[in-house]
Length: 160
Image (cartoon, rainbow, N blue to C red):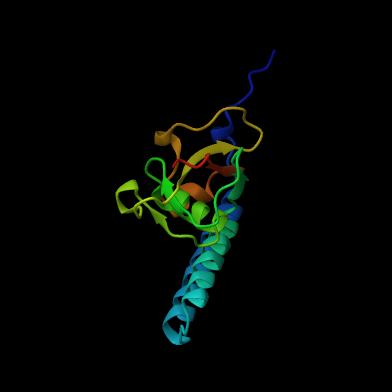
């Protein structure tokens, strides 16, 4: 019987890792140029730049985002709250999943507004379990070195 290597041990080759890092850097430079040189005339355009920048960065790093909807639909006017620390990678995934909807804490929620919590979990494609918080890379090089990283954004039921 042969031992199956742990999924974290299977990393993309160095060429793919280098291309991912270069694409992520090119994406960040392009986003920086767009926000500094082109006039941002509306909040909608600023929001669109944020969402597209987050999606392009995740794509450049080879990260997939999976959004799991709530069992009951969210109200139209809502206040989104993050359930736990997001980190940079989770923040990009939530920005992409919620299309730039502002993420606030419970303390910042307006009086009487419905709170719609969000949970972020990380897993590897084809792996049944979730990664522990300590195994989730925080650097661009660490993220580019993982094969099949999936960020799951769980939209939880709204709380009154």
